Length: 229
Image 1 (cartoon, helix red, strand yellow):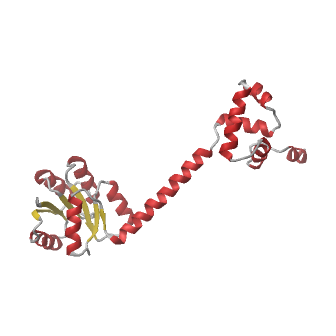
Image 2 (spheres, helix red, strand yellow):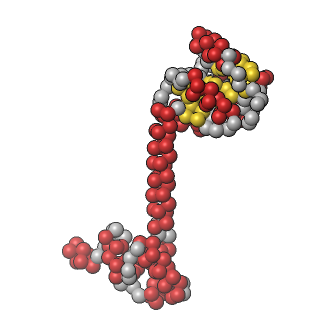
Image 3 (cartoon, helix red, strand yellow):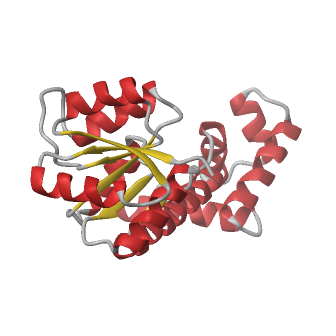
C-alpha cells in the first residue's frame, strides 16, 4: 500500500513537533513536513504535494489564516486533501472550513487510532468530521433541506402577475368573457389561468377564489366598501 504524505501546519511548536513524531512512527505514513503559518503552508504544499494537510484553523499569517490557506491549497492542488485540526467546536468555523474546501474537521483531542483512520479516509477522498460536530452538521443539512422544500412550495404556490390580475377581477364579480375583454386575451386563456389559480391555491371554485382574494386584501369586498361610504 502506498504510504501517505502529510503536511502539518500549526504555529504551536510543541504540539506540532509531538504530532510529527507520532505520525512518523506510524507504518502508513511515508513523509511528514511542517510549517507554522498560512503562507508557508501553501508554499510547502506546492513544493511537496502531500496527500493530506492537517491545518490549524487559527494558524497566523502572513498570507491569511487556516481557512484562506485551505482554500488556496484546495484550488491549486486538487489531489491534496486539507483537514482542519483544531480545538475549536464553533459551528461557523466548521461550515466555513467545509466551504473553503476542507475534507475534514478534526478536534485536537482525537485519539491516535481515530486520527490515523481519519487521515487514511481523508487521503482516499472521504469527508470526516469529529463526532461532536457531525451531529450539528447533519442537523444543519436537515434544516437547510426543510427550508429549501418550503421555498419550493412557496414558489410553486405563488401566482404570476397575470394570474393575480385575473383573481382580482374574479373577486370583483367579472365573468370569464368580461375578464378576456378587459385583458385583451382569449376567453379560453382566462379559463386556463383560472384552472392554474385554483390548483396553486388549492381552491374548489371561482367563489372560493373570490373569497380568498378578499381575505388576502387583493380587493376590497362590497360590504367593506359600503361601510366606508
